[in-house]
Image (cartoon, rainbow, N blue to C red; front, top):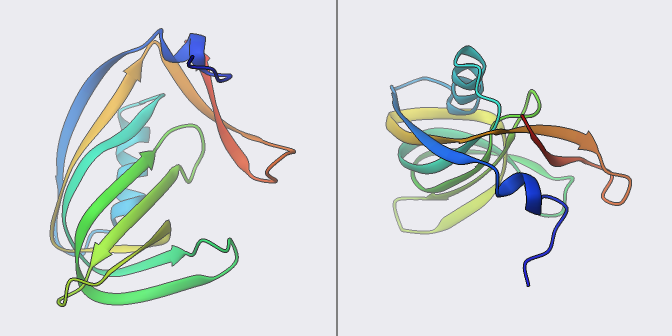
Length: 146
Protein backbone atom coordinates (compact mmCIF):
# COMPACT_ATOMS: atom_id res chain seq x y z
CA UNK A 1 0.00 0.00 0.00
CA UNK A 2 1.44 3.34 -1.08
CA UNK A 3 1.16 5.86 1.72
CA UNK A 4 2.65 9.30 2.20
CA UNK A 5 1.52 12.86 2.74
CA UNK A 6 1.87 13.62 -0.98
CA UNK A 7 -0.24 10.79 -2.35
CA UNK A 8 -3.26 12.82 -3.47
CA UNK A 9 -1.26 15.73 -4.92
CA UNK A 10 1.20 13.43 -6.69
CA UNK A 11 -1.61 11.66 -8.53
CA UNK A 12 -2.94 14.94 -9.91
CA UNK A 13 -0.04 15.82 -12.21
CA UNK A 14 0.91 14.91 -15.73
CA UNK A 15 4.48 15.44 -16.95
CA UNK A 16 6.15 17.50 -19.63
CA UNK A 17 9.84 17.36 -20.57
CA UNK A 18 12.23 20.21 -21.34
CA UNK A 19 15.58 19.23 -22.92
CA UNK A 20 18.48 21.64 -22.49
CA UNK A 21 22.23 21.66 -23.07
CA UNK A 22 24.63 23.61 -20.87
CA UNK A 23 28.00 24.65 -22.30
CA UNK A 24 31.57 24.71 -20.95
CA UNK A 25 32.23 26.92 -17.91
CA UNK A 26 28.53 27.31 -16.98
CA UNK A 27 27.67 26.65 -13.34
CA UNK A 28 25.13 23.86 -13.70
CA UNK A 29 23.18 24.15 -10.43
CA UNK A 30 22.50 27.87 -10.74
CA UNK A 31 21.86 27.59 -14.49
CA UNK A 32 19.17 24.97 -13.83
CA UNK A 33 17.57 27.13 -11.13
CA UNK A 34 17.68 30.19 -13.40
CA UNK A 35 16.03 28.20 -16.20
CA UNK A 36 13.27 26.97 -13.87
CA UNK A 37 12.63 30.53 -12.72
CA UNK A 38 12.64 32.00 -16.25
CA UNK A 39 10.19 29.33 -17.48
CA UNK A 40 8.07 29.76 -14.34
CA UNK A 41 8.16 26.02 -13.60
CA UNK A 42 6.41 25.17 -10.33
CA UNK A 43 7.22 21.47 -9.93
CA UNK A 44 10.46 20.81 -11.82
CA UNK A 45 12.87 17.91 -11.40
CA UNK A 46 15.84 16.33 -13.21
CA UNK A 47 14.80 13.39 -15.39
CA UNK A 48 18.30 12.63 -16.69
CA UNK A 49 21.69 14.26 -17.14
CA UNK A 50 24.88 13.26 -18.93
CA UNK A 51 28.02 15.32 -19.34
CA UNK A 52 31.10 16.36 -17.44
CA UNK A 53 32.27 18.89 -14.88
CA UNK A 54 35.63 20.32 -13.86
CA UNK A 55 34.61 21.15 -10.31
CA UNK A 56 31.91 20.27 -7.80
CA UNK A 57 31.20 21.44 -4.27
CA UNK A 58 29.21 18.83 -2.38
CA UNK A 59 27.87 18.37 1.13
CA UNK A 60 28.70 14.89 2.31
CA UNK A 61 26.33 12.44 3.99
CA UNK A 62 27.23 13.53 7.52
CA UNK A 63 25.35 16.80 6.83
CA UNK A 64 28.20 19.08 7.90
CA UNK A 65 31.24 18.35 5.70
CA UNK A 66 31.40 20.41 2.50
CA UNK A 67 34.09 19.34 0.04
CA UNK A 68 35.17 20.85 -3.29
CA UNK A 69 36.39 18.32 -5.85
CA UNK A 70 38.55 19.33 -8.82
CA UNK A 71 38.02 17.26 -11.99
CA UNK A 72 37.44 16.55 -14.74
CA UNK A 73 34.61 14.18 -13.83
CA UNK A 74 31.93 12.40 -15.82
CA UNK A 75 28.39 12.96 -14.54
CA UNK A 76 27.16 9.47 -13.71
CA UNK A 77 23.88 10.67 -12.20
CA UNK A 78 22.14 13.93 -11.32
CA UNK A 79 18.78 13.77 -9.56
CA UNK A 80 16.58 16.09 -7.58
CA UNK A 81 13.87 18.71 -7.42
CA UNK A 82 14.36 22.23 -8.75
CA UNK A 83 11.31 24.13 -7.60
CA UNK A 84 9.96 25.18 -4.28
CA UNK A 85 12.88 27.16 -3.00
CA UNK A 86 15.89 29.07 -4.17
CA UNK A 87 18.26 26.14 -3.90
CA UNK A 88 16.25 23.18 -5.06
CA UNK A 89 17.56 19.81 -3.86
CA UNK A 90 20.10 18.07 -6.09
CA UNK A 91 22.34 15.04 -5.57
CA UNK A 92 25.10 14.02 -7.98
CA UNK A 93 27.39 11.06 -8.64
CA UNK A 94 30.64 11.75 -10.49
CA UNK A 95 33.35 9.41 -11.78
CA UNK A 96 37.03 10.28 -12.19
CA UNK A 97 39.52 9.07 -14.81
CA UNK A 98 39.96 5.77 -12.95
CA UNK A 99 36.24 5.14 -12.57
CA UNK A 100 36.14 6.02 -8.86
CA UNK A 101 32.73 7.44 -7.99
CA UNK A 102 32.04 10.23 -5.52
CA UNK A 103 28.75 11.87 -4.74
CA UNK A 104 26.72 14.06 -2.46
CA UNK A 105 24.32 16.97 -2.11
CA UNK A 106 25.14 19.68 -4.67
CA UNK A 107 26.05 22.93 -2.91
CA UNK A 108 27.48 24.75 -5.95
CA UNK A 109 30.54 25.22 -8.13
CA UNK A 110 29.24 22.53 -10.48
CA UNK A 111 31.22 23.82 -13.45
CA UNK A 112 30.48 22.24 -16.84
CA UNK A 113 33.58 20.81 -18.56
CA UNK A 114 32.47 19.92 -22.12
CA UNK A 115 28.68 19.62 -21.92
CA UNK A 116 25.77 18.86 -19.63
CA UNK A 117 22.76 17.48 -21.46
CA UNK A 118 19.79 17.63 -19.12
CA UNK A 119 16.16 16.71 -19.46
CA UNK A 120 14.08 18.63 -16.92
CA UNK A 121 10.60 17.38 -16.15
CA UNK A 122 7.69 19.28 -14.72
CA UNK A 123 4.72 17.77 -12.91
CA UNK A 124 1.84 19.81 -14.26
CA UNK A 125 -1.07 20.38 -11.92
CA UNK A 126 1.09 20.59 -8.80
CA UNK A 127 3.64 22.94 -7.28
CA UNK A 128 6.64 22.15 -5.10
CA UNK A 129 7.36 24.16 -1.97
CA UNK A 130 10.06 23.80 0.67
CA UNK A 131 8.95 24.19 4.26
CA UNK A 132 10.66 23.82 7.61
CA UNK A 133 10.27 20.29 8.92
CA UNK A 134 10.51 20.11 12.71
CA UNK A 135 11.33 16.40 12.55
CA UNK A 136 14.39 16.73 10.25
CA UNK A 137 15.44 20.32 10.94
CA UNK A 138 15.62 21.05 7.20
CA UNK A 139 13.40 22.66 4.62
CA UNK A 140 11.70 19.64 3.04
CA UNK A 141 9.57 19.13 -0.04
CA UNK A 142 5.81 19.70 0.23
CA UNK A 143 3.62 19.12 -2.83
CA UNK A 144 0.47 21.18 -3.38
CA UNK A 145 -2.19 21.02 -6.05
CA UNK A 146 -2.11 24.11 -8.31
